[in-house]
Image 1 (cartoon, rainbow, N blue to C red):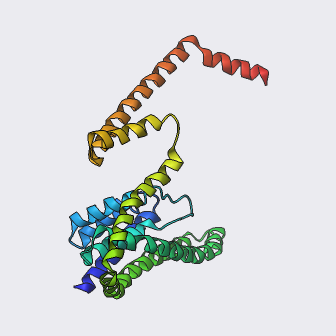
Image 2: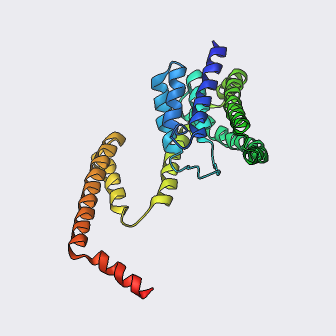
Length: 267
């Protein structure tokens, strides 16, 4: 049974990395990665629950270009896998996910070193107009990338589950309670990281509106998200109407043509 679970986790990690290979299509987000892991392990509900918790933790973590602060996709897959296989609390899955995400960054950098070393060979094939050799090398690179992550997921579960289980069982209740409290605080850290990037004085009222719905009216995250979506749609419709009205006014008075003519003679 453990062998099958290890294969399933390896496939889940390979699927997640397949999404990364073809661009930022969201496969590395915890909600997607954990759900895929849960489906393959036969625990769909647990996968979604762990994914929702980890999504809040990694909410402010974004990979830009080749910079990967945390491999939250790999951390999510292993966090969900260990959480499901060990029948552990969500706090344990979060605690295991964070260091694994750091390890994933190191492994990715090692792959980048090898991939960068292949650049001269790619350039040589292009210079010689050898498209078949270029495509063959690209296929080898992709297969190596996906196989590497599959093996990592397989070995991590096959060799590490018992060790992780013994480690979790050896943790005193006081420390486990501390991990539970810390896991409850980490989503706030994720939201804070996101707010650092998005914070604007014009958006502040919306933030406090969401805070008020939860604090004063005991609203749930789903209720706040539903209200937020409705507000976002109304704002988008209003902005679209204003944009269309501005275009109509501009076409009527011909101000754009005048500005272009003035700019032309000023040059």
